[in-house]
Length: 315
Image (tube, rainbow, N blue to C red; front, side):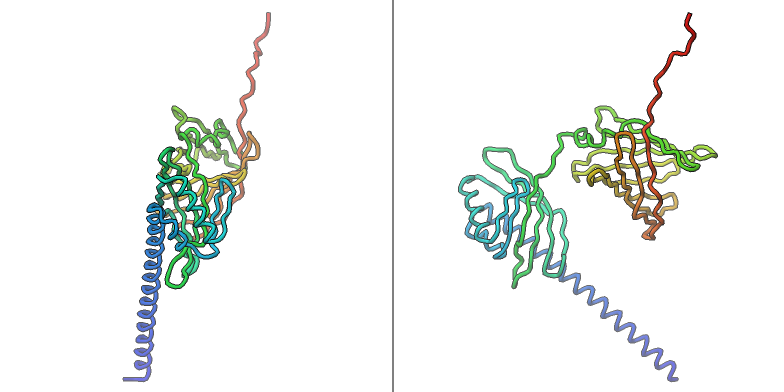
């Protein structure tokens, strides 16, 4: 065997060893993360069980010594394990029939020993309607246990209907136009029957004629508690978006399937300038994970019909 072949074989063996080591390292880290998540979920489940068994003296065992509980609706903040346990014991004495249940919607490790948990809680009282709230918790690994370090409770918005949830977008109803450069975009927003959905239709025109048309359906998703939309374009592309409000801005995070089969994503930022004007811009645009250039914001202006005047000659 030549020296060249020897060193090539040695180099290949080194690559295999390093590759195997990397695989098992990733496997071990993933397994540890999965085991920790299972342990956190079990801790939260045990906490609910202890609460429902009215074992107030054991509730404190699930909290760190400096843990905090904050009620965002009332603004009350309770600091320390003993104070939290005292508050819970007081609630149990006043409401003997109280029951607690919880669901976890989001789980994320901030560090290997700190995790963020979000979800919903339902409190059932014997003489009142169930109370549903959102919660955000930080749990930490102390010794051989996972403990609650903080919990924030927030009221959960429950719109009475899709119509009520969409009222914040009612100002969009009407005709809009953006005539910039050589492209004209005409958009119309209108209600469906019973105002259950908003429908948006648009035309994109160039000097050569209509380049594209499309339809967007905007509605309230009670399962995810979000305004969502579904879009269908004349070129065969389609997509969906989730909407959220940020001050005077509306953010529409979108994922679209292009006619090529590629996946396009990005966030449309809509800024309401007045009742008769808004701007819209696509940011964070990617196609199959590849960043795309950010275009300028387009300004949409409401089309106001001119009053009809009688120009007929008078006798």
